[in-house]
Image (cartoon, rainbow, N blue to C red; front, side, top):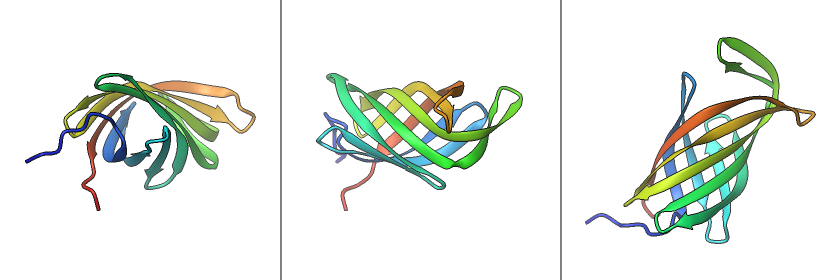
Length: 127
């Protein structure tokens, strides 16, 4: 029998799609509204909150290595310091789907570019 989730608290493992890139991630949503993100290369912290019976939003600041690069359209962009990711998500039993944006910043706090993102995640089994 599968577990049904009515709040997004827990550890979620998923995939994010942005531009031509696909990355795996985990995000831990705590009962106090905090959120921690981990990818193979980076990590980040932020907050989440419910917006409805089966909807929620989360915002994460993901720190990158100084001077990281990325792609905006057909252009390679360097000097990336961090991203601020904003996702609106909908729960489906033990999964969520989300859409939003990632704003890409340089070390001075200037927005370099913004990109649309889609996420899919499954609740990880309790350990």
